[in-house]
Every structure is written in C-alpha cells, then in structure tokens.
Image (cartoon, rainbow, N blue to C red; front, side):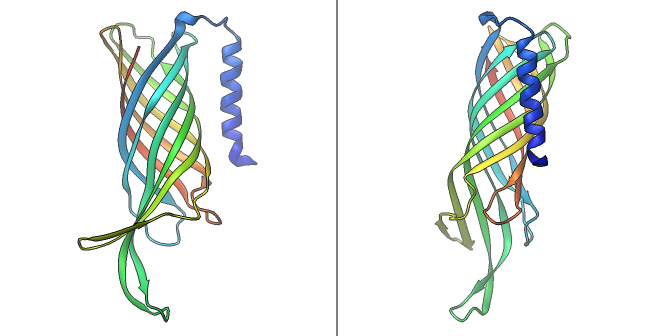
Length: 212
C-alpha cells in the first residue's frame, strides 16, 4: 500500500486546495506541449542502457493563486530501455552468440500536478512542478538488431496500467497573448513495467509548450 501513498496524498491536497477558492472560468488555461529525453528501467536482471523517449499532448490548468496552479495533462509517451547483450540460443538452448534488444512501450498518460510559480512578475515565471500520473500501455515492441538487420515483435507481458510520481522545474516566458513554456521533468514509475518482474520505468523529459 505504501507505493500508492504519494499519489493519494497529492490528489487529496490538490482537491483540498481547489475547494478553498470559488472557481472562476477566467482562471482556466489550456495549451499544448511536446518533448524528448531519455528512459530506462531499474531492477532488471540484465545490464540495461537508456533509450530515447518522446511525449506529446495537451493540458488544462487552473490558476488557484499567484503561487499555485493545478494542472492536468493528456499525453502520449514513448518509454523503454535497451539490453545491449542478450544471449542467442539455438534449438538445443545453447548460446551461439549475443545481440542487442530494444524495448519500447507507448503509453496514454494522464498526469495531475501542482505547479508552484515564483511571483516575480514581468515576462518570466520560474516554476516547480510535482504530482502523479496514471498511464495505460497502448503499444509495445521488442526490436532485435544485428548489424543492418532488425526484427520487431510485440511484448506480450507488458503491464497495462502504470502509476508514478512526477517532479520537475521550468520557466514560462510571455509570448504574444500566451506563455511559452520550457520544462525539465522526471517521471518515476511505482509499478513494474513487465508482469511478474520489478522493472520500474524512469524517464527524463525536456519539454516545450505554449499556453493560452
């Protein structure tokens, strides 16, 4: 149960904070964002390497005060990891060589976050973000590569649901009628990526977006 505690606390605090102030439609914002970065897993039995990660989507937020904004996003996020040295077996289960394997998992992800903004005024608003996400695996792929040859097939034992924590920082820059956003974010999964294993995903994204 401890692995869910952080998510429950964050959602409870967000709900409690929003109840303190009467909702005002003028404080609602929306925008789009996309980013790239790197992802890997912890607790794998074999050596792993990072692979490139991507995300793209949109968000809505509510400015609770000058300091606090509540934000919900809907993203497609591509994560995974690489296994640089996997044994290749023949029909007698004898090792005949080694190859690299790249695991890619695509998620439909719903982050819920609190955004703490420094009240500096002007055209620049540095911020910290923290929260949680729930994700649904919508696709997966294993790629075995050797030289110029690559073969893909689906990963059958991927966990369909993922839960995790988010932390990051960034800055909003006034641009026209809205704000241009630059953000660095770290995602850490609390559930295993693969059934029956303890391989928890982690990803670092560098994101860019625009809010109206």
